[in-house]
Image 1 (cartoon, rainbow, N blue to C red):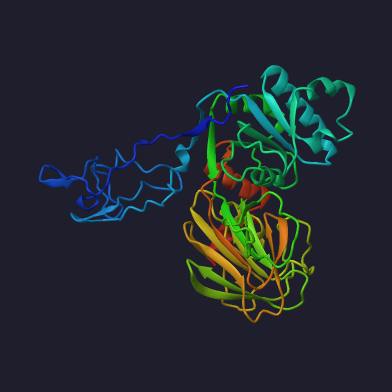
Image 2 (cartoon, rainbow, N blue to C red):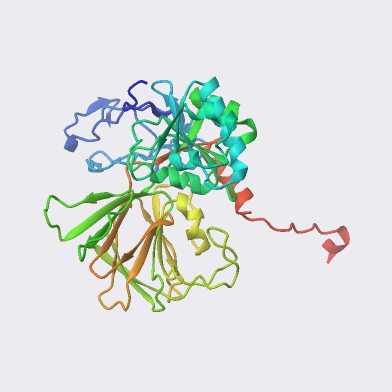
Length: 462
């Protein structure tokens, strides 16, 4: 097998990928005179504040969520100071296409466990990939150990599998792309397996909700062929980089699927665990009956103290398991910090707005706040959030990451959250915009109501 540590996929953009030179003389860039006006080593683009009629044809606004990139020079002398730590580039989602540097040779199949309805689709897909496409298939060991799969007709196919165990085997440099069979949870699970760069993910809707799984399995062969050929749109779903810092009070088990940082100390006073989160970070009061009291910092400044009461389910929950008026009990009051992808999960059930995944933002949503004025807010993606227990808190808090890795947070511990440099490249069925609105309509029944009847001619006279 070829060395798969090299990057085999990248984004193909319709726009020019050449980096912009430095924008002004203050940035050590020379100025070129052109017809009496100053141009700074690049083609003049249309200003966001001063639209020009003669250049509107060249810089046509695309049918997407974003217009042209804003010009970062203001007048003859001013510009934005270049930030060497900047890692985010807002790209027009309509131009994001998947392409391969080398033909893909390996694929990871994520299958929902203990679901008998997925056995036949799983077998068909494995046979297609191994026998017709000659690909190396990675599957989790507990999937192969399912007694329902162990039959004579599938033994020959299983011999070509490469198995791994979560939390023990590192497959980050072995997999070219991922195929998920199940619901939204399979995509979240695939994200948790990769703490850095994530291979492209193709998700088939074989679960219950399917907001993040746009593909139908009926035509899987043609759809997989298109992905292998590099003919597919892609959306970059941003993740959160989460650091949970705990005081070393006593010996305990090592956290799973996390990066433990000790700063070289032989007996560190703090233990730092780092995670990549696709949907949301939920900090709640756990089993306690007291109000939750959490201090929320933004870039080192205290912006508010979160006080939450008990949690009663609304019309529906993020997992569809709670009925209206039912007490949620443990895991109630607190705060949700979510990505745009996670804004349509637990956050929207708590009253937040829905954000398109291409919008660079972080959403902060209180859970049952003990204040009528505490409403969900959206902050820029580059900020750093920090959550700690207040000094006079009556109880500890609990944190969960994408519904997993639940752990207790005591006074002196902290949770630091910021945007990750490693998004999840999710393959689209059509394109990022149409797929999102299709999911809103089909899964959440967005703006569905009975239409108003028209007025008759007699009624119009009154």
